[in-house]
View (cartoon, rainbow, N blue to C red):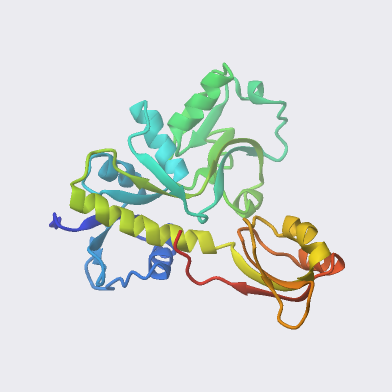
Length: 296
């Protein structure tokens, strides 16, 4: 794999949910990704950026060493790498809003659990030994950690361990294996990370351009543009109801003295209950539309 020194490099999970969601995020930011036959890299056609397709466990190392200037990785993987290194090897730029899951300790349904001390002397199977050890140390618990690289949920059934520590998304896998979560060690999601090694001025500028586009996409994920009409006496109350909005734009309505048009970017979801409250406060002709792009 040849690294082009004149382009940015973004380390991405080779396959899986994070890989798919990362590509969708980049496409939403206007990056045209070549879908070639190269299993190691994917080139962006309209921006000097290459996606380096690697194992998720290797992404923190690629970015920490400066082989890739940026990366997208689950916070769980990043925290495990940081626990091994003793320090965070990279800078977290932004949470990305996808890949949400929790690192949890789970027990068989019939196992009595009365807090971390119930783990004393037990065997716990996990793919995250360092995060689990950190939890045990914090609570002063001595337990045996059994390292597994996959199918951790089978450990109690196979009598390899009495407890497991694994990622949980919906909880369906735990339930299917007769397990229930008893402790949460970490709330995780995909994050954009950046190397702490110094970049050349050209690459630093390219990095800022890329981040600006990505932040624009992230800003629109929950944001909505809301427009409504309201009488002057209701403006203050209505402005306070707009979810997550900064100062709205208020314009006088032609031919309707004392009435105004209110436009605002709401940075939180706008629910039907919110619309009903706005209407009750005196708003009319309420229109809520999605935002495709927004440059911060």
